Length: 361
Image (cartoon, rainbow, N blue to C red; front, top):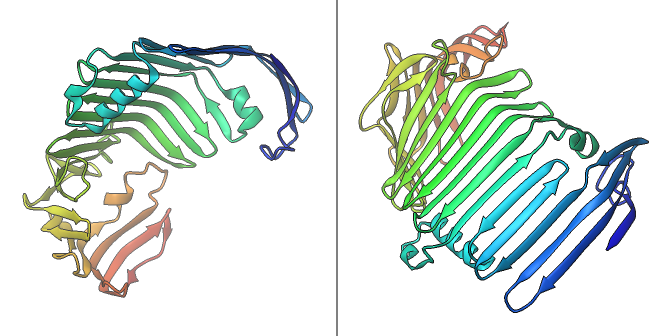
């Protein structure tokens, strides 16, 4: 048992303002040849920040591990967590690392291992006000984990209805992750991602990894037609983990600012440990086009644009007025030594509505 009668977080350099607290701690620890376990709790939790009192509900916690089980739980206050596995922590960690690593020896692991865990976090407004003043909003959130060695599957789901930290807002964030056999699928969905007055609506990102490589799908502003963006691509890997390089190429429709852009079937980016090169990397829509040229790793990098609207790129951000507008015509070359050479213009160039006329180089 222990009673902490006073903690001066400002004096400990953990806080810039005067924050002091106290709490009571009770716990027990047991260890023998088979079992390691402890349990305890925090009670009478009280913090004071600049004379304002912040009492918190008691929190109980416990953990035990043995050859045939591992249990962990936290209950009380703003958090609830329960975790159950049918093997020791060492065995669970070994199976988990093997599944995540997509190791070829996964048939050697204990096929009966399973793990289930769930986590719930309540509204953290008071926690934020006390310890993280920039945390303006953290709505009740949850996560679940399921691992089955027999199915060679790891499933993770997390949901964050609203998080606002400083000028950053995440609205309705959902994350899912599935490892099944040698395949992996990760998805991220977000109703709104904002920074000050800049924001993205309805963001969907999907990554699927197979032994042959990775496919990606990004969609933004999917509920609109004016500034809908869709980019699907395939990474043809030299190794399952992309360690030795990959080739990036578009697949399916490429939609930028609500318009479909065309590309050659041979259009690709080639990434190697020594550097990057491009092959027929050109996209076009009617008389609008942009091309990236770098045929060899040690070649200069060149951009060639014709009647290319800046809003094709900047339109992904939702603002009252487009950050940048203008039409690019010309080329620019960056050499290996960093020197720059080019010839071109940006006509009708505006920044947040302010007219700058024509820029040339």
